[in-house]
Length: 113
Length: 117
Image: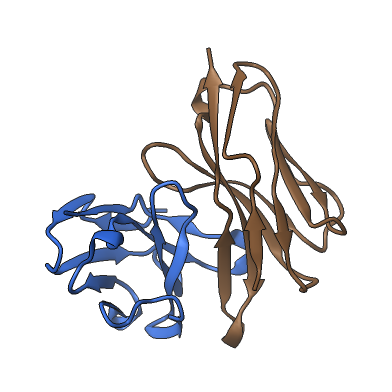
């Protein structure tokens, strides 16, 4: 099966600019996740979708971050305006069920200067 | 809140040696899943092995095996006959049941493993 697709691979922006990341999960995976991984740390969950509904966004900085999942398939994560501390790798993952764990994309490395 | 702790920030061994990575976790749940993920420089998280908490038998996948001690809340990964391609960050992860029947994966801080030729 095809993997989780993410784009872009890299992005460099200035602080206060906006940026968007795209994710296409594995076909048939109802649950989609966005994780933030700061250098040297483990990934931290930002938001979780079940089909096109938000299940958990308790760790999402809602004053600057937003996410949507169109028709329960693709998802977009946006940051506006970006801060220096948003520099990180943003990982998208999808899963069929808890027994199988997640399948991750290759992530987007964001650098805010 | 559930937490996952990896106490070894870095480890280094010679090729063909055996290495064990440690992980402890904290939870009040009885049913859950534990995972080890590998993250090479390509950044993609790759599932190495998983363990169901209700199973007493330790999971094994080729050169990778775990030592799951449920009472001690310990979940270590053993890599036998280590290879250069095993060089990567390794993350221990815990999956619990969250609200509305949804899964939530919680990661440790990671262990950077280097296999030397």
